[in-house]
Length: 213
Image (cartoon, rainbow, N blue to C red; front, side, top):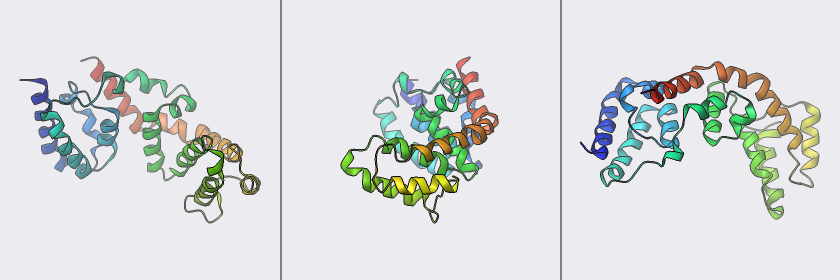
């Protein structure tokens, strides 16, 4: 059987299993997927979203499998070594795009996803062209910092007021103080729990097990 047909049959097998899952996190534990190279985006999608979404997404991939297109290049595959590095520091975790996604889903499970969303927004803001700083600063402030923000971050009154003043004459560093507060909060609070969570440990264990097969 060709590699493409083998992948097609595995995708079909996944379809049969999906109805029994209310949450497809356990999907990555099945040994029959060990010989398939999943791209990062599909791996994260399979681990964290609903069964129906996974089913629809995988169905959309079948034409590509049948036409002989590769799902990913080897450099795009998530490795156990890469995931192990996430435990070295929050900085290592957030420096990895896949790590950001996995950690973000963990924070979402704790109803604190606004922290990483704000941190990422600040990282993007620092790269903004000067003529766009004002509008982007206002959007970030309204979304996360304002006292009535829908995704208000947990910062002290002084930092909130200081940030409000800084965005009146925005610079690339306008949110640095608030971003540092949130980073420290994640580092001391959420990050240690993430490393002990099923989301992280199951992902690491599955990748380590598959690397030995």
